[in-house]
Image 1 (cartoon, rainbow, N blue to C red):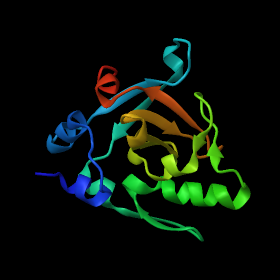
Image 2 (image 1 turned 135 degrees about the vertical axis):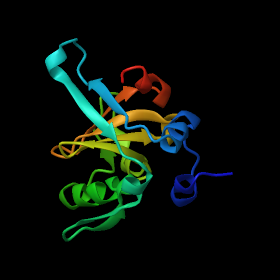
Image 3 (image 1 turned 90 degrees about the vertical axis):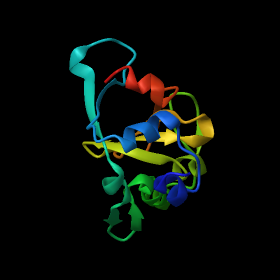
Image 4 (image 1 turned 120 degrees about the vertical axis):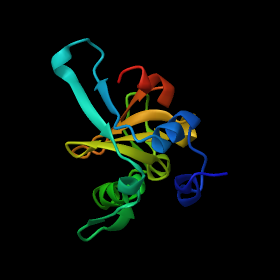
Length: 147
C-alpha cells in the first residue's frame, strides 16, 4: 500500500524515508555542506512530518504549493530573472525540471533539503538566496548516519 505522500507526489519515496514518516520521532540531522570538517560549519535540519509537508505555502505574486513541492515556486521565481533552463550545482548544471520535481523534506533558515528522485533519491540543498543547489548525500540512508 502506498503512503499518502507517494500518492500526492505521484512517485515512490525511499523506504527509509517512509519509515521515518511512520514513526513519531523528531529527526534532526547535521549537515556540513562544505568540503572541510569544521563543527562551526554544521547546519542542523529538523525534518518535517507528514502534516507539515502537506501544508500549503503561498509565495506572493508567484503562487501556492504544498511544502514538499515548494521548490516549484522558487524555480518559477528564478525563471522570471533568468532565461536559463539550468541551475548551478556542485556537480554541474541541473535542468530546472529536476528541481521542480524534487521532494522537499526539511527547511533551515530559508534553505531546503530535498530528495532528487531523478538522481536515485539523492539528497540536495536548495539555496534560496542564490537559486543554486548542492548535492550533499547519495541517499536518505547516508543522511541518517549524520543524525
